[in-house]
Length: 451
Ligand code: PHE
Image 1 (cartoon, helix red, strand yellow):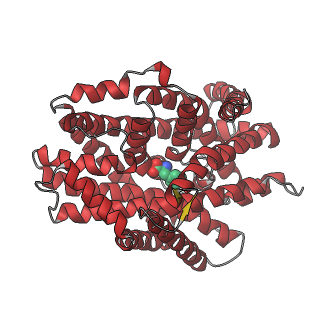
Image 2: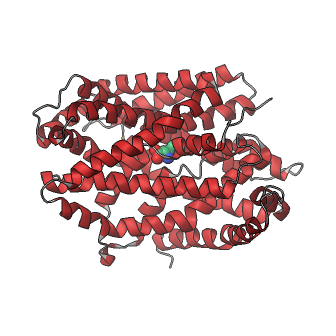
Image 3: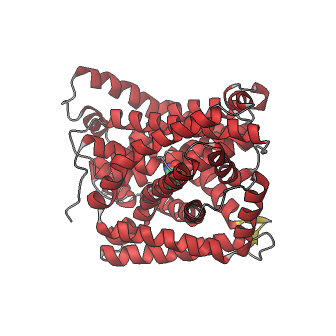
């Protein structure tokens, strides 16, 4: 099958960046940082992103560009003709992608609702407490989040059927930069509120006593979630990257962009959180209750609010597309169904599971596992366990199982990148082989109380 590829280098960064930058940065980062100690969390998060996440991102891109196939097939192609268990890592990723999609679609649906409410100017005059109450009532209705979720999934379906270049590249190229500018404007407004410095301190001044194994695990989970790692999505993106693109630059640019957007959104949220007296540990609704309040205080707030929630929805779509793509390309290429059929099956299954997730978020819903909603359960299984495990195995695979010559070829573009690329290859292969796997194993052992 002929595979498409991204047209320009910027297109690659924008498309990979489009998958990476999404609700994970704007919605999940602030609330997880808020629940896990602010500055202490940020510090660990940056370290983990650089030491562990970037090498794994690089490893996945290498695998994808080398094999030009889906994540399951990539592990098989690299070990063929031997039959090994490695393709199971691809399968683990597909399961993670499915579970993440289930709750990601629901939160994206919240984004669609907030866009609709912004357009009709519903937040005008509402206090943070009122906005919070309305959001709780929305969640408790059960069916409303399902409808918004369905609208969002339908948009995914249409774009996914349009194909890679037309579907993804066009969108992200100009909306991503626009999003960063907009978050910057919101941040400046947030910083100018009374008591804003409290929020800045909360985010930047680490209280080292708060760094516990649990916080480290949450930071690893956030880094994996935010960089879309350990589920094979980046293997698929790698398969669309042309031979002359410098993978190391791509990985570094994407990771930096990801961390910067997370910090920018932290700086947009926390000063406002402290200024309005919102609790930083409010959980998943933190961003949704803080921002509408902030927009009310800003010049041109109505316009900015509509634009912002529009961009949030687009950022969510560019990310959710890669979740759908992981499932679709597996069905398409491995189960040998047409792309259209594959996308349809993926979308129907994800919608059903997402509807269950939305239903289980109703406070006294019957669908709870050990007192947890499916949203909490799926989030916790994927970010704490399956993504880091998938990432660890990918790293070991790229570092130890595939031939070194392939690693070298991919990192130096077959020698085309000159001498400096050789040094990068040496460093990267050391990190991929030793540092990153050891750090992940240590974190797992620490959390499991073994060391
Ligand atoms: N990285 C995406 C974000 O930050 C979320 C995501 C996770 C997308 C896993 C795909 C797979 O929003």
